[in-house]
Image (cartoon, rainbow, N blue to C red; front, side, top):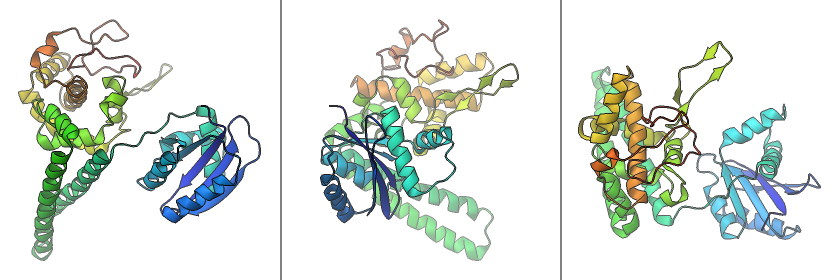
Length: 353
């Protein structure tokens, strides 16, 4: 059923501003502000009940975790919800030459963006996956703190070094507890444990890397092909060519999970030594003169495709898959996994897709 009304939401830590407008045209608008907690959500429901709103499409930006509770609440109320990248709404505002920015104006812009672009509906992740993601991201935070303390320890004076070593020990203890909680959670979530085991079957992917990949990637059933998983990891190539003078070196987009990229970097280094698929890829790239970090990034992309393949087909890693025909790119050649490709090109249904 198409939406009759659009609700643009500008979310922040303590409050959220809303703008309600008809979906078909500009029409009359209603604006309000509510506190960002459970009582504010109930007040929003009451406010919406006073408006003639047969079917609502709510849209908000993915701003840290501030909008998660509201998005879940609106979804439970039966509304269509979209959670969009803030860069999309910012560029939309730029296209309209908006010169003034405040919360009320942003809510109205988000409503107009939703009415024009009709972003896809958001689906909440299962409770077990949300818990796993929270644990994985908390572990990533403490791991980063430990690494920062270790880096500072190299040049610290003796007095500061004592505090740094103490904090490193505290981080180690917290990391151990978090990893134990992750293991306990997986015992109660057999589907997540199965996905982790499948990803762990790939040479170069350890158990913790597999856990991060399963937590950070959306459910594989929601993805049409492996290229979408690569994009969600921020590893898709971004190329900029214009006219005869602008020919930028292709780089990865980085528009995805930073934690997943950081974790896959070390996994790719290991996979280049132990995984026959990434070994062959690295050798092909070196033969073309594309070694070093470029080969590592290509190996990271290949690992994401392998993770997608084994989970989608519910089969452990099989090195013999790489002998089957690979995806054919727009230029008619088999893809090495290093050339830019269209995200709409479907990958072959094999474990090395």
